[in-house]
Picture 1: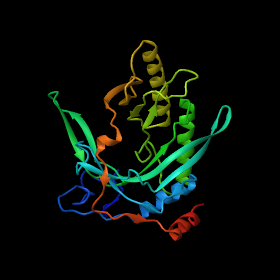
Picture 2: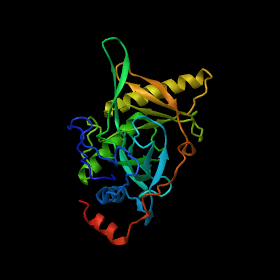
Picture 3: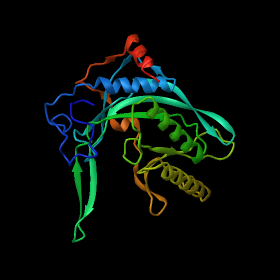
Picture 4: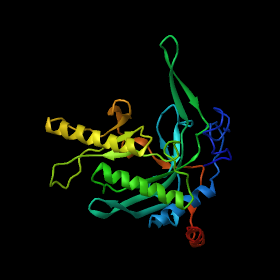
Length: 279
């Protein structure tokens, strides 16, 4: 996203498509990838979004070992696209799901957790994926079942492939889903605390994880437990979710404007060219 390294990281030997920028070396400065911005504009248009005339990048700070700089260059309050929608098919007919925003950020490195012959655990770090352009599409909380979530994902995948912005293969990691789910009493309009589920690598896994988590939350509420906002992982083998960490709020990331990148003006001609490039 901010350097000239190849984005074809899947088939490359570990730590070979790297440079000073994506490794987060001191003094290395980012340079914006125009094509990636163009693809996000196309996606926003395909989803009926408004395109921001002025957008910017921000630093999202969190101390994970797969985050090379200790912060991620992302977008906070001025995304490239916002306010769209996506029509999906449900058992009761067509339904419109709101699209909150489409923003652009950089991907992180990849951790491989291993155990040696003596039972000692260790982790390996592959930096190839760090810095690859990552487009995040955030939906409104309009889906009411695992079936609707799966329909949304399959429709979204079809659109991304059709407009040529991504191969969108979930098994290869270039189409990912972090699913937020909450429950509420029937008839209530107030959403409960949301739980984010990660580690899902297929539509089937997303569907199963949401089914399990809905049942877990309903059971917990009926037993008098309080649902806390957290991030949970999905264990495909056991068909269960497990706690990973307490879910952060926006202020926990200490967002501030990225000082090494100027604000980006998206002119009418750029948007027009992107619209004409759509099939």
